[in-house]
Image 1 (cartoon, rainbow, N blue to C red):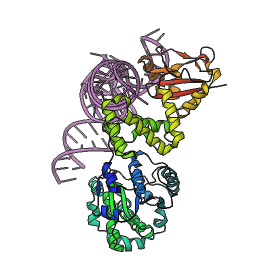
Image 2 (image 1 turned 45 degrees about the vertical axis):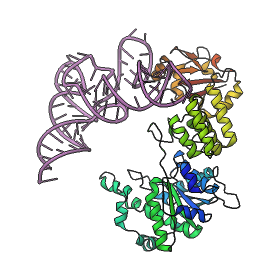
Image 3 (image 1 turned 60 degrees about the horizontal axis):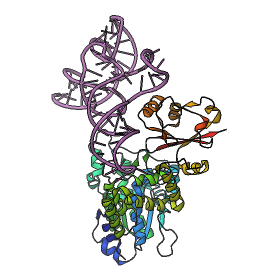
Image 4 (image 1 turned 60 degrees about the vertical axis):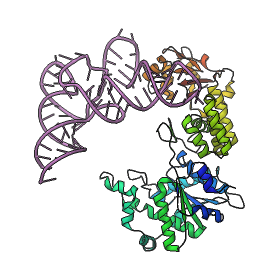
Length: 426
RNA sequence: GGUGGGGUACCGAAGCGGUCAAACGGGGCAGACUGUAAAUCUGUUGGCAUAGCCUUCGGAGGUUCGAAUCCUCCCCCCACCA
């Protein structure tokens, strides 16, 4: 079996590691942790690299431990932030932690006998920690001089406008304390994270050494970028979430299908478990016959299956075929309802479509496909609007009951990818 | 506190009495080309309506037939000085 570090290296996932990690990991199965901030009810693609980090750790025989920052989430990490963060309420943090747990279960095996994944919440120890104890046992080991030299803190200190609160300033101490607690309670000796976590991780390692005389280690992953310079994990609709309620399997799948060539192979290494040989094969295919987009397909398939299961993947693929293979003519209304379950929809009473029907521009504005009737009109004039996949060239077009497929649905589309299903209700 | 320069649509930035719903660039949205890619090219980008109308240029007033443009007061930024 290849070592965890070699696996990371082969996948370009190794940004940096503290000295001696390789030997430490080779010595015995270890417990490795990564922290997740419960700032939202769902994780998004930005957390996918760390998650895969834990997946690889488990596959390599180590015990992955996901730490949800129920306590630290109440504080806020200044790393990478230019402004003070919104504080979460305890209830929100707890709720969000539950959601994160459910999502991680798709990736990590919490049941295997040998090295089941674990999950902890730092609220368990931070919640009851007394300030005096904290200052005496933990704070004592931190030099303010060093803390102020931290890049994340320095930037905020130099910025007169935002500044940094004592609360966020203390974040590094709390994260370090987490490591110490996990070292004590779980025998956890390795912390991983994004490269922005390097400072917090090494601070934790120092703390473990000072307080317990123990040796701990850190590994950080590179920041995921994309070729066009936009933020990875954002789609037109905003963040791509792992929660199917927030980002449907179809849109999740589509995000990956639409990854540009320059990024596809790298993402295959980051986000799938495909063996190197297969990745090479896909890279060659991408170079030789890019129009097939074999790499993107494999990527979308693998990642969607892992998160949303066979059912979610099947639904996404079905919708994709229906939407992009051209005609929906052959589809029965029932199939349409099924395929477009994922697509935004609204209802309109049949009476509203009787006689003259309703102006298409009105419908477009109402469904949100266009921002106003004027916008809708311009879109039609520009040739970007389709009813039941047939382009509309008349801005005065009205939608009547006759347009509804089997009298039940009208499929509106703007551009290549924005659909809206209008259900006719009687 | 003093002096000077600014605040214009999603962002940057022109305009400095009528021809301004406001140049230009970026971004967004569509179209063409493709591969549901990138790059490129084209169109479009306040609202409502058929020509036309309505609401916009930091805020409030005023001058004028007419103001983003001139005047007064207020608010906020930036530079230099204290």
